[in-house]
Image 1 (cartoon, rainbow, N blue to C red):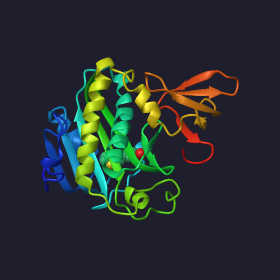
Image 2: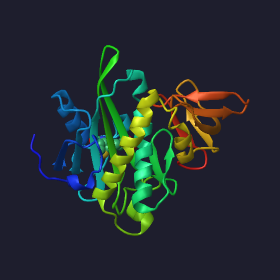
Image 3: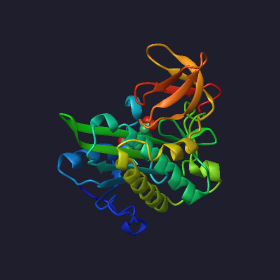
Length: 267
Ligand code: BTN
């Protein structure tokens, strides 16, 4: 694999293990794809892949993720947690918290989380996270956490301009990407160790719920077995969104299986 640039410079990383190996590309197909390849070749826990642009950036549900040069953070890292595969989807929530904390620290903006992991500013999505996993029997071989943050993007195609934004559009000025990467990775490392203490969201739940944009808002749960509406209360320790329905019963919505939309907008 050709490593084309040293970006972010190692000096912006004040992490202990995350980014202990950094692979940077001026352009690659997808940092998730490259991270998976490295993981298959035995790359260690904490290996980071970052790119200035991606030609085939992957979003959730098979969608493409636009990743042009110079305007975003497009990065993925490899984790090798000792965890049951059923718990791995919560790592996406942990990554969402790290993105929100990193952006808050660097920009002064106050992004929130749209459950389960999208970071939103002014009710619009600023970051997407794609977590992929390889398992063997009942254990995790590796997890790749891919993070895409729209940093200095100036405009979006009409089909997503109502729901997508960038830090530059919210702040009114450009933001340097390397310190943001440093802050997000540092936050991830801290949240990850609190997550691994219990192997679930027990130690992070309160902080996550404070970041949750959907909290106390009406949402529509797009359950394949039948959609319903209710008030989002927050997450439980498994990362499920608790939704109070009209009959006062509370449903736990499992991330990855069901989508949740705001009734009055994207959040
Ligand atoms: C989403 O659809 O919300 C998830 C988008 C995830 C995009 C990031 S960019 C870095 C990493 N590499 C990819 O190909 N995808 C993720």
